[in-house]
Length: 271
Image (cartoon, rainbow, N blue to C red):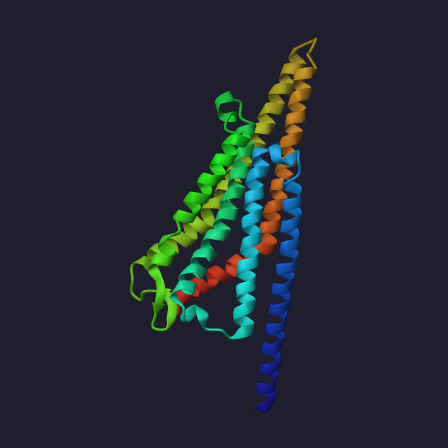
């Protein structure tokens, strides 16, 4: 029995150390990636793009998410603190920030994908929405709505039976689960995918029309097709930048989000 107990203790220590190293790597690499994105997106030329403005906002909230979620995990795993179950203010604020910060980062990425679709539209009225002044206003509106839409979390979360949780037996538990699954997890990712695919489809159709027009015209005006080619290249570059932000989001931010969401589900079901 002593040998089995020794092996169990050793295995527990190994898993704990691995988790610690992974958290530190996620924290360090995530911060480095976010800082690099901030430097890139605040460049003089990049600042004039509406899509880059959305990506800049997303990067800021990605960085805040990494700092908050990972640091909180390291704090609780290593300090043995029970502040979460003792302070109502900390209880409410922690679960609120755990949801608001990553959801805002995801929705700003969606806005960047939407902006690229608007930019490639054939309609002048639709393309007019892809402007830096519109992006600034929409970014602020998104911040306000994104912060307000989760205000129910600190209202219903409190300390019950010496635990930070929703009131046991409350119907809000099911509302909250639906909110987590639909609004926080699936909706922004589905919207990103839809508008990214629509952008690619629009670019292909535009290139086909340009090619058909050039072949039909025996004395083509090269300026028009060249301008369109430059536009296509710009959109592709922005899509690549968007992809890099999404990869950074998946690698270094979602691990922290998944842990926080797992803790929320665990608090809902294992009381």
